[in-house]
Image (cartoon, rainbow, N blue to C red; front, side, top):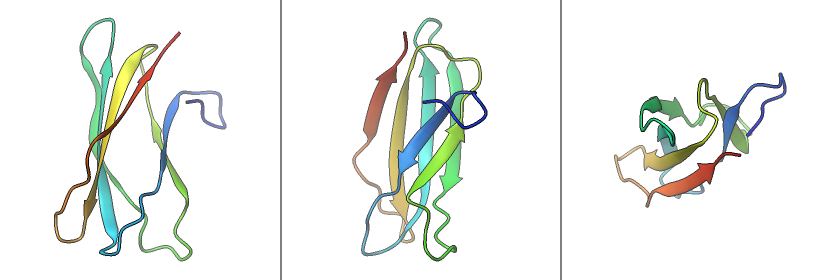
Length: 88
């Protein structure tokens, strides 16, 4: 969970979908405070060819936490949530 600049980032491996993933709903909660650190939509960069294999979502302020990611296709269909617990 570290980006090239030494900061913290959540790396999302792009989903495969026959209806084209449009974006990801990303929610990250700080484990020590329960506060929401990130709650956003990340575009899947579907307009780039070839499409990037991964996306990096910057995370500020969380040392330990839980990330939850849901892929959403162009028709609004959602994937099962993928979760990751990270920390010390």
